[in-house]
Image (cartoon, rainbow, N blue to C red; front, side, top):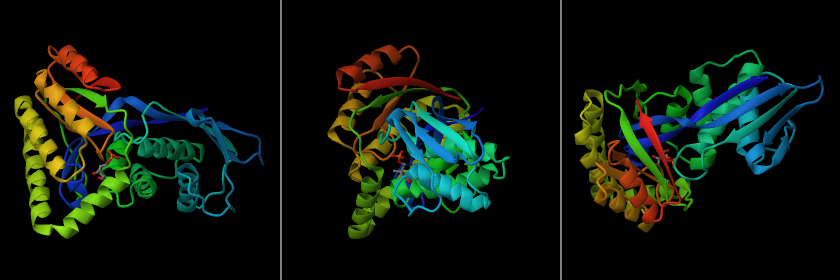
Length: 310
Ligand code: PMV
């Protein structure tokens, strides 16, 4: 049996601006994963994908019309890229990553599935090719994705990402203690990204200035991360959240959680990912984590998990 997996991700700084050529910083959340297990089947049995969490079994049919299903599209792209026939295989997928909540569940499932297929077929693709393939799948979820989600998830390393630039890995000099809190409200990244684009088209000067400010902030944050200057990061997160509010991608629920975390002593807090719902992150010290966690629940978080980023 082949077992593969891929992590969730958090965008620390720069979401949305990254779609418009600014840099952003994202880190993998290795404790929260999507996984795939592949079991070879008798010759001629074909390929089946079992989406265990959705209780769905999907047979793969190479001749079928192109269907709007990300799992089948992933298989199809893999076979097209490698030129291989569909293997006789049952691949079962599980994910611990909540969907539509800014944690990269779609990219992680696609990465785990691609890795399972790849290993079953003798590993014809390298990480760069797997990354390119998962990026294509991200387009189904996001429309015009920047590429940051697939990159951080496939390489499972903190990244400083800017479109049209080589991927830069960054070193986190001092561990970051984060609380990730879920508003319980799903939101489609595609819609938020589209709305930011329309806003930018309508008001290029005002929104362009906000995007530039986010870019400058991301560069400052990178320096703080690489020098272990944790205390500088909190205020940068709060400022980033304010810029995201200006871009209209926050929500009352996100704002309430951010305010509650800061009031309870978090060093900083912001929404993370597509926004309008989904998750927010707060930077804490180990001493303050319990107090911030209860404040988040009190303010309406449906789930809070702790993550230490190294
Ligand atoms: O997948 P999400 O919801 O974490 O959003 C990804 C980050 C965005 O910058 C909003 C979109 C993108 O493609 O970079």
